Image (cartoon, rainbow, N blue to C red; front, side, top):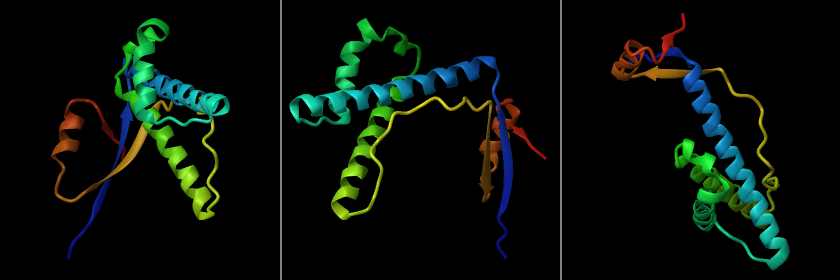
Length: 143
């Protein structure tokens, strides 16, 4: 008989990691909102559309002069945000064609930085990663 087990982990971030997480979230939120504004203004002025790759190239060209603070975080944060925006527009227009109501992409807003991240990890014989994370002090087992 096969038995599935689950363990609940709680990640307790220290001050430095919490700050980095907030910076990454802020940059991603800024990139999403910047990309949305750019798409809307481009469509209103020229009736043209753009995609995530073009927006990422434009953002990279503007970073050194206008957004130097973005260099403090990983390049993946704004890149994934622009991809998410691209996917949101793709889903919106696909919904219009198929008749399914999917909302227009909206501005991303600051809700809260979650101080502790909780997750459930199902164990099927692969407990080494969890063990090493616990030994390194990255996660604590919650009883």
